[in-house]
Amino acid sequence: MTTLITGGAGFVGSRLAHRLINAGESIVILDNFNDFYDPAIKRANAAAISKNAPVIEGDIRDAELVTKIFKEHNITRVAHLAGLANVRKSIEFGDLYADVNTTGAVKLMNIARQFPVSVFVQISTSSVYGQTTHIPFSEEDNPDRPLSPYPASKRAAELFAYTYYELHKLNVTVLRLFNVYGPNGRPDMMPLRTIEAILQEKPITVYDEGKLERDWTYVDDTVAGIAAALERPLGYSIINLGYGSPISLNEFIRIYEELIGKKAIIEYAPAPASEPRITYCNNSRARELLGFNPQVKINEGLARTWAWYQEHKLPTLNAR
Image (cartoon, rainbow, N blue to C red; front, side):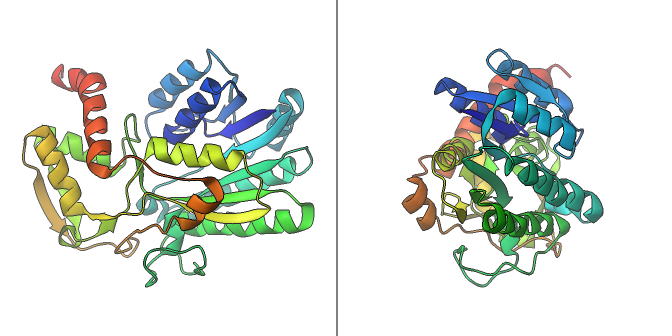
């Protein structure tokens, strides 16, 4: 049994890779090391993984390469994390997001259904819910009004997943992730950007007077949920994967101010149309079907992130 992890050199993918390796499982990583953020970060992640598993550089849209990987490595499970993220970046590049996130996922499912794949875990996003009035977010909602190309491309992939289950009986579990953060996180996301802004005394742009709320989910809790999904073929299922306790952006920054011992410089701005007022996970389905039980509260998760930053990033910053 070998698991293919697409996007396995990224933030969440690399953590999943180490978890499966430590459990004695066979994995293969596929990543194209694009420059969405500094490729050196992903290459460092890949270097650590390559000591214990194959790391293949390539694109999920390359059907010939992907087919070869399935054949040569006897792939029986897929964790599909590869794709383009970031709501605001997607606004100007809808065609690219559709090509990578939708077409790429469909190509991968089309190949997977030709092999003895027991479960295909498709990573999606809480952003598909848009500006819903149903709080907390429930999988029973009909998320048909995405606020940007990013969630639109992810929602389209979800619909294709249903088709591949119905037509080809490919077991697809769609996991909608909620605001994943933690050590070695993506540098374009708020957790690390906030640290650096406070340290460098640069302003932080905060939308809607800091009243926007986000349901931050620690990376190890997220990875535990993904690993559980890989163990449980469920036909076609959509499952929210989040902590289930949103906080305001003002509170998020306040926690960091206390950890760092320094006040943030805040510049308030109107929220773009792409930003929902809140993300709030109803994780009851994940608890029932996956045994999901998130452990790390936001205060502890941000403290761990700050400790990691002090050890791995602060020496470099101080040397500038």
